[in-house]
Image (tube, rainbow, N blue to C red; front, side, top):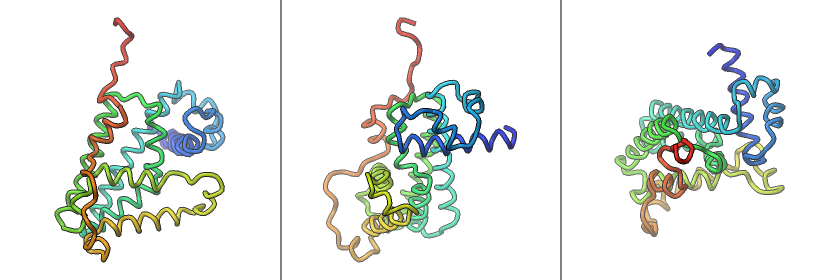
Length: 221
């Protein structure tokens, strides 16, 4: 991909993420065009329909999520510190908030399953390392961590969004939550086991009712 084409794609993808978060998947594509600062033809040549844009956005977010997980593991020798770095970096991508929106209109194919599996495996390795270190509570699964991030990173309703215009409040709340998962923290070591069982990533996929691969052939075909 040429450098200028790559830059246009990045502007479109980032604009689409923000517009879909603010207005939902039915948002006019013209809003994305204006936010991205590209011409309408640039968007429609690359994405013939809304579904193509949603699929590319989802794959892009998952690839970037895997990248920040790998970077966190490389930077920090402390497994829990690496996990903390990853959670904050994922929040900056607005991944947690975007997932719920994208699930509304996502058609899963083999390529997305491959990307999703690779990303999940990389993130699971971070979580497993934090468990082995003894720092991350044993009753915390990847699904718990993902849902926690989603709950905290969703846009605040109404005028409350002004409280977190720069994102600092989100990161404060993430740190407060992560401290509760750290057995080395005063509250973590004394905390009683959480009710229920740890959620896995597979639990999230099943609950979202997303098939592993969607057969897109016409009925009777």
